[in-house]
Image (cartoon, rainbow over all chains, first blue to last red):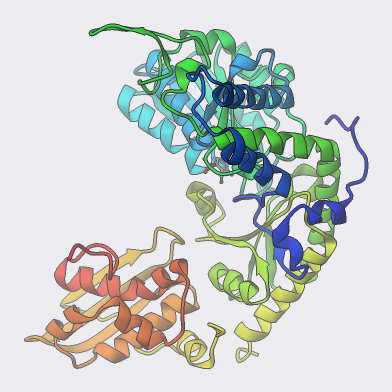
Length: 413
Length: 129
Ligand SMILES: Cc1ncc(COP(=O)(O)O)c(C=O)c1O
């Protein structure tokens, strides 16, 4: 991992950018679901609404040119963040889910046929599973799954057994949103390419937290969401290799994605416009551009180191709690996510009691039911961290868990 | 108000009518897709009257306590009365305000009951009127 821009985070200064943390006793530990928004991001969107709101790519007047310019600058910032060769390889979508569906429909319909195989992992979020199930049903292709080890690490050795000339695609999450596992996607991509398969990376939980370099990885597609990286909801990203994006048919038809339209036939615009039919989320894209500035100013290496410190502290403190089971690998093999259960207390109750204690965590299947089944649990509680979290947040979580135990396990003693 | 009150916790720890019936007239099970909680309801019915009821399953405090309270409430009632039970009745029974996710936990037992007895699908309060 590139740590060249490492400098310690000034977490207190960062927290001042987030009005929601004015209440310093509030421990927000659900950033894997969606992050909080810093003022500069909201201000960038306000500036659009207050001073140059208009549609893009159309108006021959000053504020429309300004809006177009800011929208395209946001695209440049995203392209730089992931080190895309060209800005046009960044397609704005609504979220990771839409990005993956775009590939499944457009690339999938052209390239996946009866008898072909798509390899996934049991760690996938439903959004990197269901679109491939739908594609397999449409085309008669087969899904194959990579399993995980007891420790929650991808069983990479298995890949060589199931990878074959039938494999057309591997769709894999970079970081598990449930276990935090960081997958060895470089090795997966290299192995896939050696076998002639393409790779779609679900980067929803990686791009916000550490450096991801699409040229170095050489991945074919990569998807992530603005709302998990200090940006607004309603904007996401699809990165693709240029030659793939160029040969793919459009996903949605309509305005903005055409070059010229006749009654019976149209010619399509170049990428990325070909995939951005209709008026996009303009303010949100501009907000995402500002969010990219925000997290790069803090420094992705610094964010990663900070999250590692929080994670180590959390593992140490949580392990001391009686009756806790922590799922997934050790801190150094994962990102800032920790899934657990307390003996005898349903995770909904854990989250419900923590809420009364001013601690926000997630409880449920985390849109990863196959993984829950693998661990033979219905649901887990999950705490996840970002650049604004503190050691105090984690201590509050641990106090809250002990409090939950005093409420729920009173009489069994 | 704290949702973890004595009354709910009592029902959670010592649920009423927990178990199954050997030969139920009506037996139905469903889960809450949001969290995977699962509840089964067994009924013995004489004419229109509910003679016996049992529930079992797994879930959080709210879903199990609500199921336990509901079985107490419907014992001896007519199926027609059960059909009239609404989301508001369950909320009154629970007696504390719940957020939208936890409301589903509270309503799961009634949903199972109505689906089993009348084939009514959907969440109480969200069916087509
Ligand atoms: C790993 C992973 N993939 C995909 C998604 C879906 O993201 P979105 O809901 O923004 O499309 C999430 C969000 O929870 C995620 O954690």
